Length: 303
Length: 293
Ligand SMILES: Nc1ncnc2c1ncn2[C@@H]1O[C@H](COP(=O)(O)OP(=O)(O)OP(=O)(O)O)[C@@H](O)[C@H]1O
Ligand SMILES: [Mg+2]
Image 1 (cartoon, rainbow over the protein chains, first blue to last red):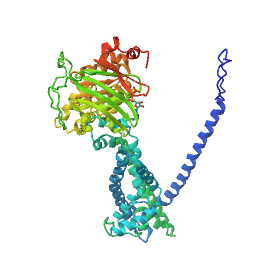
Image 2: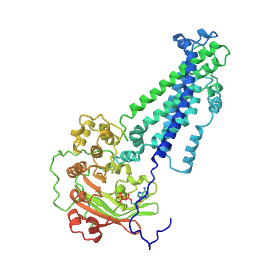
Image 3: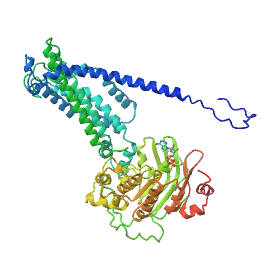
Image 4: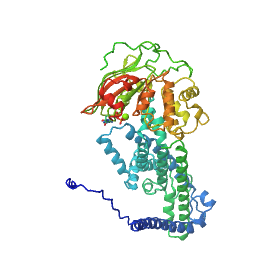
């Protein structure tokens, strides 16, 4: 910046000049608005085509018999009950294991761990883990749970593997939720003579719970939709009985879809589409549940 | 600086030893104020206290005496270390990793900096109300009950919550909606809720760091009236930037400022009337008359 010449002070202050160019600014705004609208339009279009295709082919097959039946060589008799039950078992195991592990790890990293290079490295690596291809978790699950711990190809082993898969996402979502709680909340609890744990339990956790639970439920939805890791750890493709979570074989919805879709006959394509509709409905239920839980847990929170 | 450190502070009922026991004051809300016509009794004494953030000395060599059942105002320009000093008294600043303090803070004759003293126990005895109301994201009832619960209160919680809310002049506002969120209240009500939850653990001293700076004039006046009511049973130290507030609400005023090295120190302390009308130090006079800061 140059210093104004002190020998020649302006006799009268010059009125500042503006060139509003309002038309041009508004035009720029309109163009960007249009671009954003187009982006969302492309997405919606793709999704609509997908849905129309799936429903057109799958809906005719979808009835009570399909939901309560077991797989069969004749598409007309085939059902998805074993896969549905298998998916439920995996989902429940995932919830049971990933909630305490994920939340405790996140609480440790945000509330207890010192801010040093080691813990920062740890946190960065957890974020990286979220990007590891899911098939890798299948290999890990096979080695660790199926073989080493001897759980065999069961839905318990699948649940544990899926827990490893979604744990990074759960931890990161929980860390974000915990970090979003203002420090004034921590000080408020400490000022009353709370210990660190009492502070976490009584003030920080309730404040972060909506975010934590939403992250957990959405991660569960991902675990239920995944097929790749389970191919490795022995999800069977043809299960005609309700799986025992601790022994024997099991299958889940995405595997069932995969198996039917890979058959050449058009009828199998049809029941595959019907199974996809069931998965979509499950996702819808889980997302709805996330909304309800979030609303319920945040009823006392107004930042 | 103040050198009359000889009178040892004596508390008549030393019922609050270490441990979670909470004495529930039995005075009725409208009871007579304890008569203190003899020499004032001091609850808290800061002796040669210095505070550091890493290598930076934020406060140096402070001696302050806080009289029992009185309101002590801490005034001074921004950054002179008022909050630092306040947060040292309840050992809140122990949570700041780089923080360290020197000297002695005597509470009822016990040095709060002593090795065997647990900061968690200190914070129950020295309560704190913050600049921005910070109710917990819980119901009004749970907000007040939280402190007693974490400190192992054994009595009737419902009664304690009601008494605390009554003392904080909030009961009539909230008695029909104890199950609503503490955050749904107005700013002034939230601050009174924070005061209620502070007195629910029956502290000996209540520290307030600019408790009215986020409030409108009417709520501010309500808090001041409340403080006047509360000093019958508690001892209050308040930091304020509002000269009128210090002048009308406090009994004793401590004026701090900072030197070239940005280290804050106490310039003058005394009865509020004297500090505002007849200060001994030029710096104090400039500050209270608005010529500085
Ligand atoms: N956590 C911290 N880490 C390092 N320095 C700090 C920290 N908190 C405060 N300080 C410094 O200590 C000094 C005193 O700060 P303090 O907040 O106590 O002042 P204050 O008198 O309360 O000011 P105000 O009236 O603006 O609230 C300032 O120089 C500030 O920068
Ligand atoms: Mg301050």
